[in-house]
Amino acid sequence: MSGVRRRPMRRLGDLLPEAAAALGFEEELRLARAMAVWDRVVAEHVPRAAGASHLIGLRGDALLVTAGSSAVATELQLHAAVLLAAVAAAPGGVRARELRVAVRAAGGDRRSGPAV
Image (tube, rainbow, N blue to C red):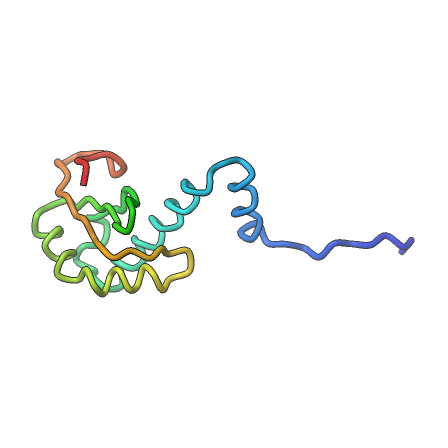
């Protein structure tokens, strides 16, 4: 070759935090990653609640979650310590000390719902 220096290839996932910071979307990226982690963690640790709960926000040191029924909300609260530890340990996860769960109305949007 003609002396052209090639930069090492970087994975897109490695570039996202830099791009998000440059565009002012750090919190949105953090929330999106945490949402994906939540879905995986719930499926693994509380399979009965998989698909029936959704992380909708982060507030201070709390995860804000909606549940499709009071039974699912109770199940999540019973497993809160395990869920919080698993979310914190997962790549892309976040550390939180509290899990706030609200029951959403049937047919509600997964990202909207009661203020928890």
